[in-house]
Image 1 (cartoon, rainbow, N blue to C red):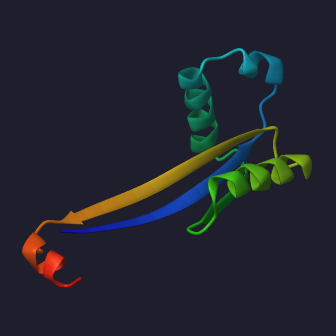
Image 2: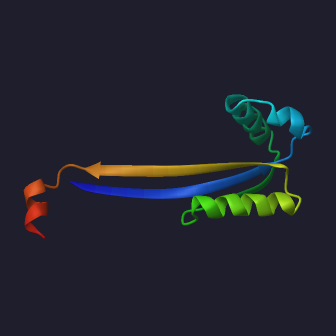
Length: 96
């Protein structure tokens, strides 16, 4: 078997009118609100990077907001995993 994985992290920032009201929402409602803002084209900043680590994504999102690019950040990690079962296990064991 062979397992491969590729990933990318996307950062989007938005401006919401009332951060206190937004903070009071649960995750599902926050995501709905941000999805609505994205459909309306109201992203302040959008970055995508295949090699950024989650901690660095948080830092980049904070920097974007400190630079005036919105007051809410959405960090999305995307991963694609492929498992190829056509490779025989005995062949793998024998190659070591």
